[in-house]
Image (cartoon, rainbow, N blue to C red; front, side, top):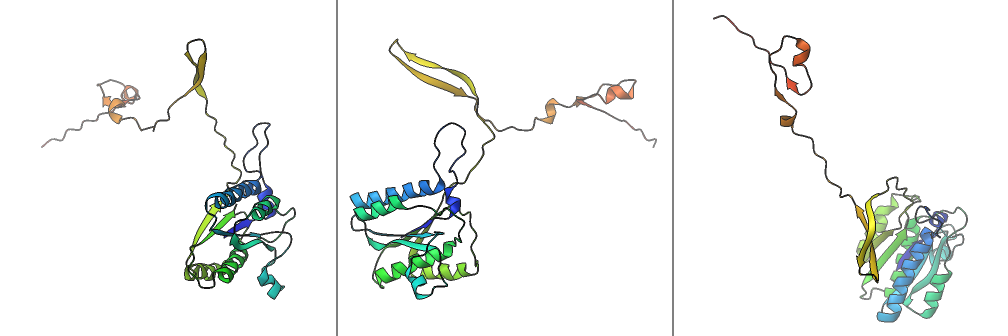
Length: 238
């Protein structure tokens, strides 16, 4: 079972735009991951069953909301738990994130997904897995419900996996090359080579190299010269 964050925050760029290239959104990256899962099941594991639930959508379409109009809003069931088909792959391609600000509670999406799993398995023996894909940019409305949801997951023997889509990160450090050139193999072949400086751990220099026994001098300032140890001698009569 897959629970996908479809809030408007998922439309944000996946990475920093540093060049004139097209950068996909977080939702597109998540959708690509789901496409990979569906294609793998379709080709190699046809006995596996997959269901998809999106939360944070502009509309609402789930059975729990049909039973109570005031609960589990903005949660849409894309597909109930069923064997993977070509139609499911087409549904994944048609998925879109919300274009306006909507409530997006991951717990609502998880509860709707668990309800679909209960309806499908009906206490039969299944290897149940729940995958949540989100950028974690929205808050949970009632954090106190988290313990209840965790208990439900444990009682149903569901393996929970959370995939966090990377958010925008501005890298202010850029590596510079020490040398650039080509590794040539005769006149017909060459390989571009970029040489970077290796990063080493910096350590504090030993004081043995900085300190030395001071020589006797007539001026106080000379004894306090950098790198010298000032010595004082005091004699006491018996």
